[in-house]
Image (cartoon, rainbow, N blue to C red; front, side, top):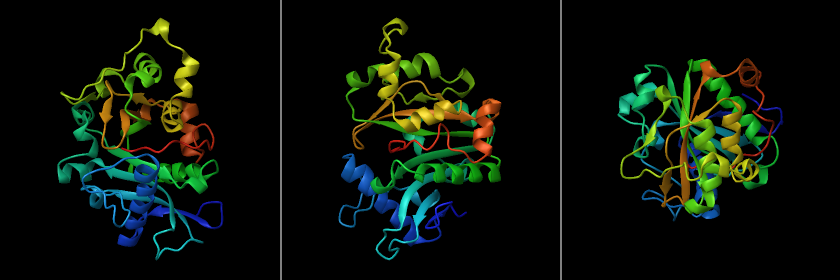
Length: 270
């Protein structure tokens, strides 16, 4: 898939060099920029890795002007795990944070999304537009019916996030049949304010653009937030049932148009 920009290409990772370049970009964003860490992060080689990387498809935005040998060619990334592959390895990444039993019980084709980020020099332009187009192609080609994954607020100060978390809980909670819930022992309530105390404008300003993009497509959130101290984030689980998308939103998706235009989402640590 060639993007409109002549020097950009959207494609899946082809080899270990591509995967390592994706991990290098993730390190620059999640570790160096946002202060995250993890047990498998390779600080010596500047690679943000985890045990499931080998099982995911890595959707890449590649700048063909940049040096692939130096792992500089990947400037945007999305990590994708189809449900059949998750079943084969016995888990999704999100299983550590959320009880995904409601999604598994649907018997429908699932896709887990995560680790979405863009190189700083490519933010504010068309980079995420191209990644969304690549994601749409991937979903349509595989007949995916439900997309989900954790998306992140930067930081772990719940008090600072009470407006956006409460807004999401009161207005975008998933229907019971799709309502995943934070694992016992890690449950952080999101209904931190009553409806009458919400400031919608403040809530929206504090909500990362990636989360707002999913909501515009008809996405929902699971119940409860997960405070990820290793990644220095507060996570929510986003769920999108493609059959519940409005005709307008489905047209956005299938016409290869970025939801809400090319606004640049914040990194997604999931």
